[in-house]
Image 1 (cartoon, rainbow, N blue to C red):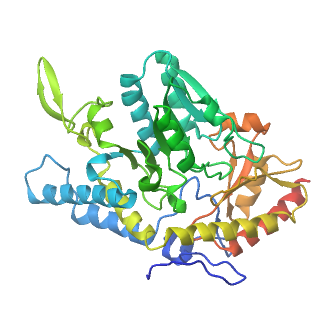
Image 2 (image 1 turned 180 degrees about the vertical axis):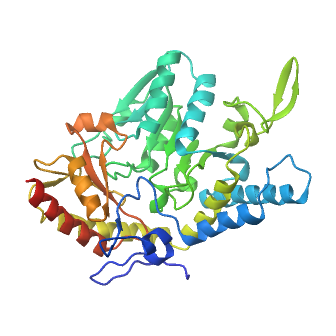
Image 3 (image 1 turned 135 degrees about the horizontal axis):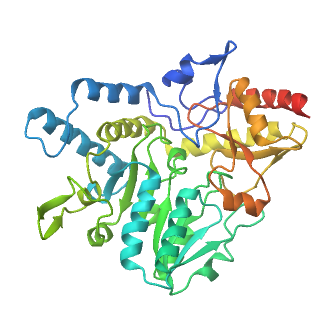
Length: 416
């Protein structure tokens, strides 16, 4: 498929990549109509190219890596390390700065339990925001409680943006870590990291970026952000589950102690002590997710056929279209109006519980997410018991939104 550089400009918004490239979407239907998948923020569908690459590895090339001395193991090791190089190229990093984990959640926990516990002292502060997923909230809360750090939470504006007047006032010489989402999984809010990260660095803090939602929308570039750590996950980036990425600047990884201990992360083991391997192997204890890493590399190759600017344009056109169509549904309220958002919309329906709406939508073949979306502090702040969330992918077009609106009208008729 040729590289896609611009989104379609007709009245109908076509998917950036046809549904037929994704076997589940090509082969699933409910009552004779195609399944409409609007839950990409939870997990994206997998293209055939990724599934085929993983199957090929498991059928013809599987062996454990690094420790084997036979050709099959050598080839598997090279495929795994080639996947690391692919990820490094995608992020504009060095391969030695890329650690394979099992999820973005594990990546964040690694930094919390290695860097923070080793380099922060009692009374030091960790700054996060109300927009964070629990994965970028709870680890910092827990490590702060255990070690006497102070967790500070930056507020948001009424529109759902990070409050840029309040944020700088929370930075001080005590701030040692700033941990922020690049794109919120609830409201879709894009955090202005190019403004925020220099502020944090000037205060002497290191910065971790949760890019799990941003990366699938063409927003993940270390050259622009200059963050110290970055976490992302494979399953949202059209790759396998069970694979995540931690980027860490080389000098920081070199200074950090290992978090998990076991095989393949050591240089030598003696009765009286252990010498650990250099990064990134130091942080990859045990047999890693070999096939998943190889599948992630295939997903990145697939994803990079679309220009990031085209993804952002496609998102905006879909958002504009969806906001217009959803505005026709009586009693429906879209939550948040951030200045910039990725292809994620959360909304409520007057008098209808989100879970009830989600169940009825599912019966119509419409896949959306309902509930707190692993962002309960934000929902508490907004005074909501949950929302209905529709999130877009490369395979989303305006017809998907039309089907959603049609089904929402049915839900309203049944439950009003």
